[in-house]
Image (cartoon, rainbow, N blue to C red; front, side, top):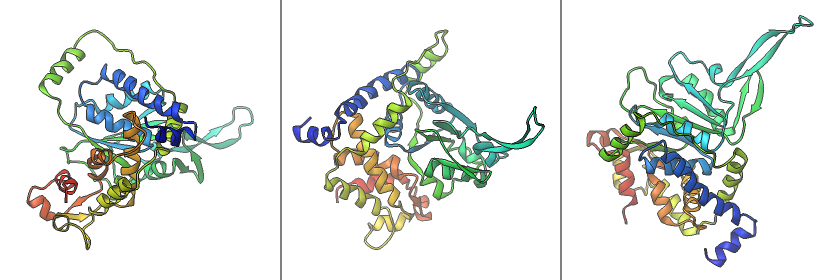
Length: 335
């Protein structure tokens, strides 16, 4: 590390914490590697979102260990974990909790008592989030944005750190409800999980059909995760990198000054949250890699997971077989 960069962080007394995050990354990846075979990119993106303090949307076909990855991460970080199976009949109170009328056994007085829902956890897995109607999906909006829940006329804070990790099946559309753009925008990034390679699939079969059970070790605590999130925000960013991130987000919008292919293929572009997420994600990636300054390459690496769920394609793009990732690839080309 350069003396200048060390001084910038040392002034806040966070050098040890920053170095701890880089070391913790190796331990977390090692522990997850005992359960999850392959999926290196998905794990990296998951950790970037975690230490940047953002929520994740994992998209992949069934059977790719999305749920296992998240529950295992909660154990490794010693976080309270809850799983909500989203179904068409799920109600908002099933997520946030509700007031229940109870009778005092001594006084026989009846009072309402709030029973917290599963959202009152550190890591909330919203499994198959697109299987429930928008009314129920909206129950997560306040929690994701403000880290608090209003129920029964009272606002209650959620335990920190707080993350929503949602899964979505991209191929099964019957009985599903598309996520509103406002909710999609609150997900820090979208992780695309693909099929494993042939060699990885062989390893998965051998590992999951034997008698050995894997015990995961704890690497960090909830308080340590919060402290490391604070360190991530203190990582310095050159103005040129901020300019690149802002320009990249703005170029996704089909307005005057945008590239011609964006005007042709994009119906709606990424908002200011995308610019913020690009910089925060780049900071987290740099620190997780043991570096104390952000480069343009960090922004490029996370551009797709940050932008892909914030860009809405026009009919022309779908007709020509153009994907969101294809549009982002064009935006990242030298111009």
